[in-house]
Length: 330
Ligand code: AQP
Image (cartoon, rainbow, N blue to C red; front, side, top):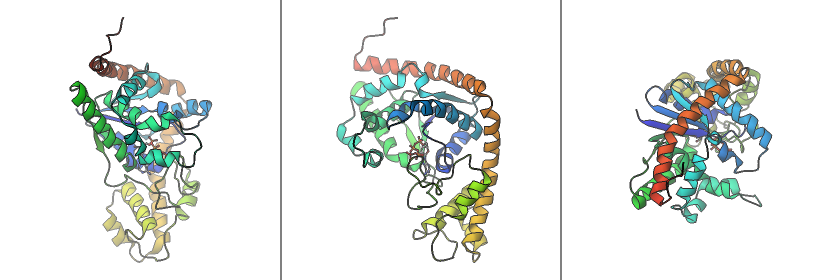
């Protein structure tokens, strides 16, 4: 089975973009891939943060992943910092084949550093740690949202460059970006992606939003001054709502356009609301069950850490050897 690796930061809550762009594919990939899913807390110190909040959010994120449908019997679920430093060590080694210019060109770095007085080296180096995350496990396929496309291209370049310089060491991974749902938009600013840290309050749908909150957000979604329910480049708000409806009901956009023709935006919004409430209800119910059993979540994570460590060790040792480090003295 091909190896899948993907990660999510325990920064804040999970939103609908994370779910539809990445997590729902993590769940289906479990059927026919060897999957590793990681709560990437090392990445979450790249911006100013509260340590107590990070600790709490890390377990919370693992609980949400289980609620969404990550099955520890079929996938390896773990927290990045729980290994013994393998991710950070490989990132350091990979840093030797990455150039400042490449990292300076990353659009996510530019966007996240904009307007800040001081920018941490962690934020600059984020894509190298991300490359280490995947390469450490010989990941072949990386299910992510469209915002990660540039990082995945760099990751491939890093693997190819290291292999070329030191001999074949890493699998060169491929991004798996969904055609539909790869970029879920903010409901209030439909020209911007939904985001954990940079979105509007009413435009961001959180996984655990209750129906009343969902109603407020969906019914106030920005559309346009016309009334035809149609996906088009000049109708970003309506297109985004149709996309949500299509993903959550499984109906193609063209069919929804036919069904909703002439009915106006309020009917479209009500349909989206109904579909979202139904789509999120089982996840929210499972989350409520799991959040009462923190010990079980911790037990599952420990099991995942053991397997991840087993898989990571040979690759890290190979990379150390290739760059000329002495074998570890046991
Ligand atoms: N709007 C989105 N639509 C589709 N996919 C998305 N992802 C993020 N936003 C959208 C995908 O979710 C996965 C996990 O994200 P992450 O936490 O690791 O990375 P991120 O890019 O920092 O996530 P956010 O939620 O967008 O936070 P901000 O905006 O604060 O950075 C990734 O696969 C990502 O592509």
